[in-house]
Amino acid sequence: MTATCVILDIGGVLEITPKTGWVQRWEQRLRLPLGTVNERMRDVWRAGSIGSVSEREVHEQVAARLGLDAPQVESLMADLWAEYLGTPNEELIAYVRGLQGICRLGILSNSFVGAREREAALYHFDDLVEQIVYSHEIGIGKPDLRAFEAACASLDVLPENCLFVDDVAVNVEAAQMAGMQGHLFEDNARTIGRIAAHLDAGPQVSGRVPLA
Image (tube, rainbow, N blue to C red; front, side, top):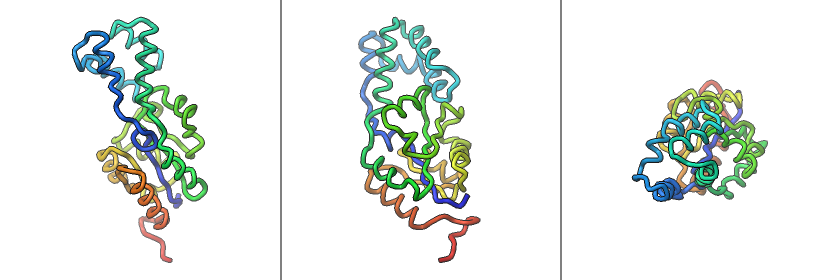
């Protein structure tokens, strides 16, 4: 329970995920007004993020709501996943890999049904950290404080001994409200420096820094 811990977000932190414009391209292709895809699919995207629908059901709803045939659905979902998965943040991933055995390591991610399998296959995050807590698997997303509690519980660590790294300010603020330390990801250099400082400080016991 007194181990020092680092928990990271995936998209925008461990993955570099710029907008690809896939939604707008599909709206142009289907001759739909801008914003139509997300308007029609919003509740399905939300359901997928908390795991209340299966991948098959997502595909069925995409077909029904956008009037697509099976190959078109596969193509649209491939575009969705290409943006979602982005590319690996190799420098930060390598740094985190070097922390194995030094501190407890975890991931807390707002996700989408199917993310674990794809990210494990592409980036092996399941080998990078000890525990991955996905919103679509626990039914709760950030910034809900219960998501941060679930991440700490999965590693059996105290919140005050955890540093949480995310690229969304409201999530960092929520982590701090849950008793964790928080760092807003802006670049690798500052993030690596903040993690190093956290590890140098060591774990706290009963909310106090242990005496030297």
